[in-house]
Length: 79
Image (cartoon, rainbow, N blue to C red; front, side, top):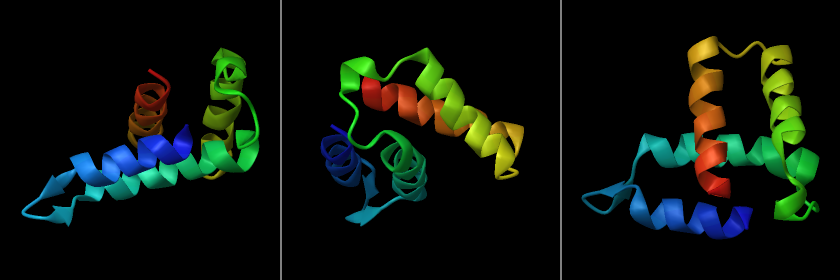
């Protein structure tokens, strides 16, 4: 599912034929999910898993706004 969303984003987030910076941000957010939950079934990825990703972002020293944007990107992927 993560790969399918990444491919969708690569196609959808373009301006004048070039991918936007949003695509790179989506890719970085999904990379964290893939590292920790890459083999997990999508239905089993729930609020606790998302919280674990959030805590990992905090440990990495990400700013609050960056964390909030990344969590939003991950949520959109699973919708």
